[in-house]
Length: 113
Image 1 (cartoon, rainbow, N blue to C red):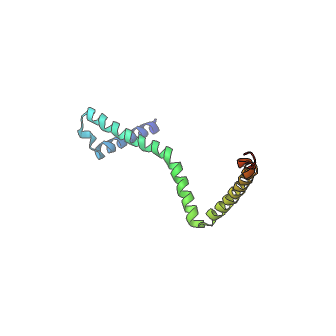
Image 2: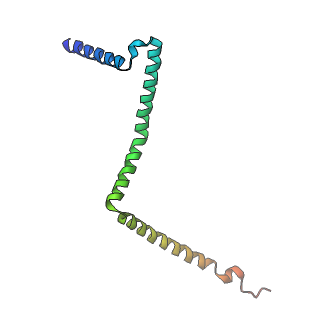
């Protein structure tokens, strides 16, 4: 029972500190309700924003710090491998398109006239 009483006194003290800090003891119950509602909504929006956007922001900051620490070499290696893959794809596409669209197949032999 002593633990319960001391916890209750501690909560009462914290409530008193809150009311004194924000001057709520001078307000009517309606004004207290409105103030507390705005405060609750503000902090809930902050918590929701932190849970939704903070992980993405931390990932972005981590990637940016990694880039600043390692320099553009990592980016160069990634772009070189990408350009190699794209170059091969372009060659294959060009060769397959050239094989089916030769000038004689597009324009004919010129003897049909």
